[in-house]
Image (cartoon, rainbow, N blue to C red; front, side):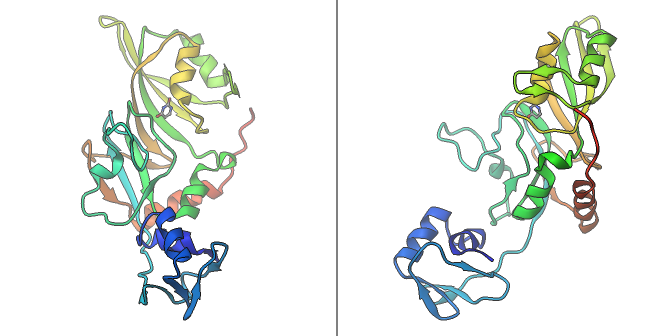
Length: 246
Ligand code: URA
């Protein structure tokens, strides 16, 4: 059972706010009974919900993966007119939401869905789904600096959980290195803050893997639908709680 305004918004009728107005103005009915208050819940699978007398379409669950370019925000809208991820989803009429977020300046693998339970499952902190990034950093970190990241490092919101860290590329001429790092948490700007804490700020950050899902050859700015197997695999990894000590 879900709140009526949520069901209507998920079915693409309008924004949740607008759907609330539709309910209050008496245009919505459940199984033939007009609803005019906001607390009412319904079952989108079993109940017949109408707006202005017309049944709403039950929304198909969508699972997408995109290769987010840098300079795009993962919010549904931006008051400053910056590019948003839905600008890169031509042909997708449903409202889909990013599973976790990537910073404006971070590129790479982003999962999008309209399945709230799936998103919650993947982002729940106790599920510790591994996420792998390539971080290009200023300077070349010593092995013991990387070890600190591996063991857990103190950030202002607490110690990080152990991470897997390895050199991907070292470029002494440009005085930079690319480090492959896998974290099991999803704190705000976590990878950037971890490298800042060892005095090697990130100049480029790309997520290349989420659970077992790779970006493969998905071109920058493009998306594709996940296969049923990929969705199942992600669910499996999210429900398998890892026992990582902090
Ligand atoms: N860590 C970051 O610092 N930024 C991201 O976008 C994702 C992980």
